[in-house]
Length: 220
Image: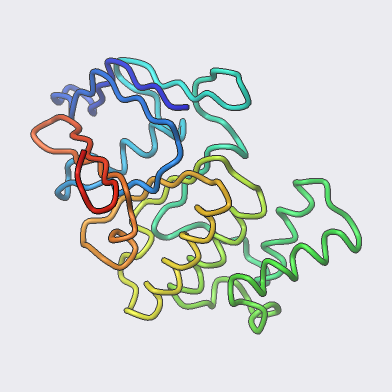
């Protein structure tokens, strides 16, 4: 599903943050992208999403039998740790996505209502989205992404600065989304209940990417 080849990236005339000769990924796992601050985790996710162009190498996604370079709108989505929300109500944010999908009338209302319920935001439907707490904002961003039915979700520090309950709520939502068939790559500097659920680990260290896959608690 993902094929990274001879990838290197840096800024201005600085040396490359890292070099990744080869990274194949089937897109079935829940991946924890690890690395120290400044190791280039956000940059790597943005490259995978097509928000930046690599200095060297290639990134190819295979989606629906077709191999394409990012960006892949609607299929490979990137969420920043402080996701952008439209300046309207919570429900209004989801209605934007419904219209983008071509849903109208009762279909749009039903799907928006169901997603608000699933994400625990039904009671906040008419509240201004930008007045939500950090955890609620992330849940709304995930709900909005979920309506798009992405094949891959790239999450940049989704639980940063959240309290324990908010982390648990966001973690449950991400796990549920993954169970629907959406592959997830999430960066996180600190371990949490969410990173413990991951079954594959990518670690950026010493200017390279190390991959570990866990099956029944054993690294392979």
